[in-house]
Image (cartoon, rainbow, N blue to C red; front, side, top):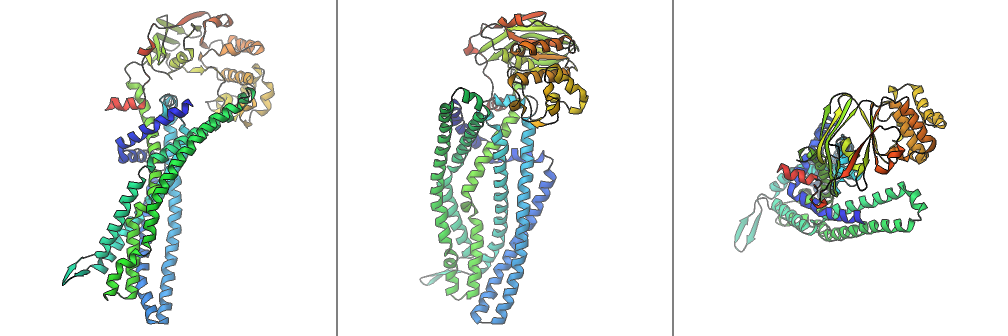
Length: 605
């Protein structure tokens, strides 16, 4: 319920930000994503080819429009031979247009997936830059459901952008072409009022413009709320999908706790939010349909009505009337492109808002470098790690290491013992560089890697067991027998036969086996430094004995910093020195608030 309420409050700021930044700013973000991608050259080529094909199609439709006059004149004269000839002309033009339509469809679909390749690839690469995904996840509602923004929203944006963009280009080219035809047909039109004639040059063109303008204004007035309603529906859909995925990932714990009824209630709350948002969208689309369908029906007779005065005054033949009506229909269809596509434009605008805001948030995660009170991370001397006056700040208070300067030398193993109430995991993240909010300095050993071992179930990527053990290093970096030796040392000999099998190992192995596998990975990679968030406390019996033996033999040169509860010191026989993590005498209300991407933008302004 909390997640839902948070996201409900996030819809309005998104819309407010969209109005503030403007459409051009959001389009600029997407354009920069495309231009930074590897497919930018192919996208440019596709744009040129699409323009050529659309222009060719427009020319074919002009020829088809001109064909109306001789064809219908042949019918009115009952000239059978000319009628057959005009049929041959029609099939020639129609065949050419068919080829162009197929080419346009292929180019349009290719443009969609190339555009998606560029935008989604750029978002994923930026999201997976060091520390950025973590910072974004802690930056507020914008960090929720990033998968939705990078996959479904991006796909939808690319498909709508291609369809609307090609449609708009086609409408503009046809408008320019048929505006000239309408002007030529009605350039001498005059209205007879009393004894005077009033000349209205281009009467049919002005009628088409006024007709389409009235429809566009009315469509915007009725349907402008669809942007917000679409955006809200997408946000609620993302919440529902996340809720279902979370249930699926923790189905064993839910079943053991008999929590199905409670989880059903939570999922139904998200489903109700989706249905409510969809209901509001349906109401908006229904209101818009009154306008679009109404104009659609009137359009059936509007071209003939507009051209009728020219026909009845004898300035147009029957064939000329058909040609004028067809030209009016083409021009008016181009002008009312906005009316016909308004619901799609609102959907596109909402999707653009979500993707652009996510893109902006990825850029804004650099804000941590500009916050005044942050922990400093620098490279120190090789073989030495120094923690200097470290204080870690969060919205609930401040934790600090009581010893002002802690220097850890190569091969040394120390405990950071946290008193009751201290946030040991947050200090672990601060030392790892994931949580930079606070004060002090961390000097890391220059040129030497640090292996970070977080609390809880270790992360096991989907892949072969060999890839899991080497992660994130290349598999060929280690000898083939090194993998089996590492498994054997942790009592996992049964896994030798499946080293090259791809599975969901977090589902295949028990929690104890996953933890043993993680220590087998440590043994294989033999890091010079390790920072551990109390994981030794999770080991028992033979597993603990094996780990202690490994660190006493194969990894005796590995330096270790282990953050534990003060009451767990007795279970840590490897360590020779203890430093203390304590609560700082700071009122939580005065603690530093964690900055968000919005704060970063405010600073830049």
